[in-house]
Length: 551
Ligand SMILES: *[C@@H]1O[C@H](CO)[C@@H](O)[C@H](O)[C@H]1NC(C)=O
Ligand SMILES: *[C@@H]1O[C@H](CO)[C@@H](O)[C@H](O)[C@H]1NC(C)=O
Ligand SMILES: *[C@@H]1O[C@H](CO)[C@@H](O)[C@H](O)[C@H]1NC(C)=O
Ligand SMILES: *[C@@H]1O[C@H](CO)[C@@H](O)[C@H](O)[C@H]1NC(C)=O
Image (tube, rainbow, N blue to C red; front, side, top):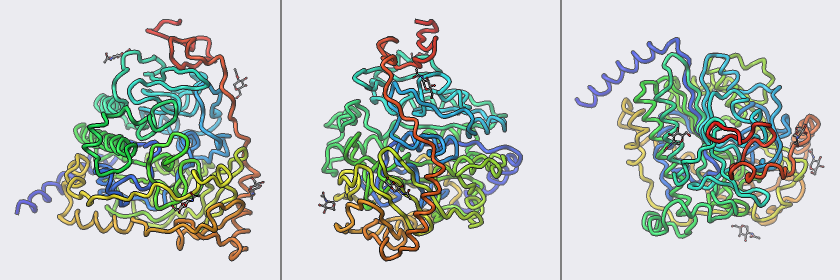
């Protein structure tokens, strides 16, 4: 009786809300995690780390199965902003260092600029990492109305500093104004606070585009080493809470990921309180696979996939992703079509009422597929990347993937299977159902949520694949059948020479169209000592500002 009443009540509410919002453009909230692996979210089968809010977003929306990002931060973020492959922009190489003079040409279409044209307010909270040498290279120059956070690749979680070329400096800004009073505040909490402020203060009559770009779960210390996560909570706290995780560093990582998940719940709650949740599209994904080992190792796990951040094996580029919208016709499902990070720009632009068809983007507009659970748009191919300096590239076509040399010339650290999670607990379904996100979104669902969640989760859990040592190196060209062999253990390039040739030809076409990468050495003039210990847009005459006064 009670349940029936509740669902009737909800039906009425939903009806009114969708009627009220019939002519309103949807709000868009994009949440980007940093360096979080396939196996570090609850919905893919990891029981070590609780991500109840992320799991609940997918349960009330869509879980992506074949979602691909770029191999590292800067390339991924350039693809997200422009809807183009990084090779079009010269952004396919290693990430930008603080003090590096690099920027995306202003000739390119960007999503925030286009949304602005449709009346949106655009806000970026957190990481940028697409250029910081001049104010003209920062978020506001590409269509954002505001930016709160850091401009380079990462900062330490409490001190908010980063080292480059031997110089340590702070990187924490609110619209080009250095924040001198935030030291000591945990950055994920700053992200939450600012995001909620943006939502609260947003004028109802305008549509909102909010990108929440987390520091979590990147390492924080500039040594780029595992101690970057050690400062997040005390050892005793983590040992107690995550004692079941044998690896000490992974316990810190688990805490960072869980606190990001909590932040997501708080943001969903804020949207609900504002009364705009029903008309908001919420996207969550990781910018690349976890760097389990190697540079900036955080002990995230991409298992059972092989490879880590920077690799073009599945572990480096196939990442967790979910999307929610009340418009979806069939909720709580798995999206099996290929989806690439470049697809968000045309997909969201189209959701906002824009025409993405004539922009010449690499991304595919998959909005109709997502809303109607249809297969009208077929994305058959993804260029994973071509890095002509490091000398490796890869492309997916249908079920096949061609790898042409590997990052670090087959170095085990980047290309082997790693990060297997040996100790697990039972999956905490109740935590998902009781999460802030599910309480805000799932009220109207039937009792079957628990059953549905477990069934979907089972479908998304990869069967364990075992490495085949014969193909571990993959020194030249390797072909994999991702359908039969998602863990890339058997090179079949000799067995299927025509498929291999077809994919090689496609890769060659992209290679012919590729721009040379724009990476540069660090400019010594960028030294933060010239600006009270802050990294600053040193190429501008008035780059260094403090308390509204030029230094
Ligand atoms: C920065 O890069 C631009 C081209 O991308 C170049 O024209 C300019 O000279 C560079 N400036 C410095 C100070 O290196
Ligand atoms: C920090 O400074 C900014 C402006 O410089 C101000 O808006 C903010 O309220 C300050 N925060 C705290 C916690 O004092
Ligand atoms: C494969 O990689 C090699 C070495 O980086 C490169 O010379 C060649 O052009 C690549 N082939 C294709 C089809 O891109
Ligand atoms: C690569 O990974 C496999 C599976 O974890 C392991 O058996 C093998 O020893 C690793 N190879 C090297 C050289 O580390």
